[in-house]
Length: 150
Image (cartoon, rainbow, N blue to C red; front, side, top):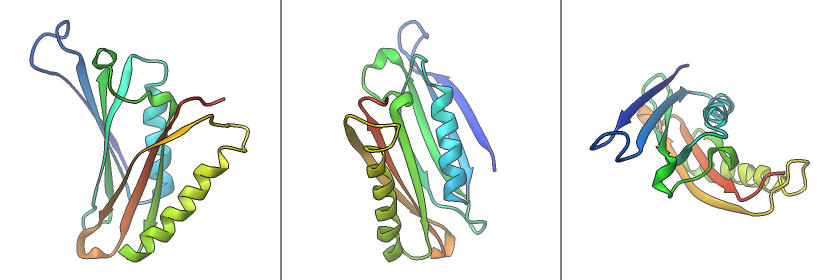
């Protein structure tokens, strides 16, 4: 699978309005998607970028899903610190099984409170889901941010 990055400057010169970067990450496997998204977030760690949005799109006949990450320049003020953001992906063969798959992700997030990497506070940013062509596979994603990670 591949990752694609694009950069654009919006509306005016870079000195007037912050720039924006979009990264597209493809994968058919939730563990692989989670690792790729984590790498993309880690690449922005300690930088002047804020995570502005996350999206998940359904796959075609090859069942590849696309996660889109949008990063905005720090001047925007709104957005999430990529360093304290985590995305958890899960897969199901039918829509009703997606809720059960999400429950296991919720349990994984809850373990962070007692693990060596502890969080003082967690905020759910969003939960996304997308279906593949012909309704054969469904991928979900829970995105959360921690106010502090030790």
